[in-house]
Image (cartoon, rainbow, N blue to C red; front, side):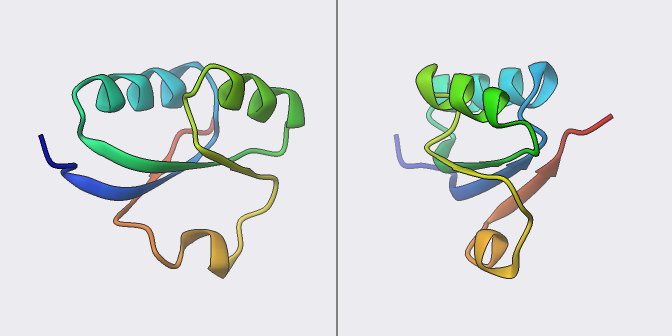
Amino acid sequence: MKDALGKIVLIGVGLIGGSLMLDLKRRQQAGTVAGIDINADNLARALERRVIDEAHTEITADNIAQADLVILATP
């Protein structure tokens, strides 16, 4: 199945955002997922578990410029 969304940027790589990304990946609806979070441990776990494909600690124009979808999953 072709990816429905090429690049997704997830701001807030916690339980809710991570669960959503895993489901989209399982359904093959997500291409590359970039995670943005201020907590480096959250990013490391998300990379290890393949929730995200790339990690960033800051929101910048470069991080979100090519996104097909940006998801805010922060408290």
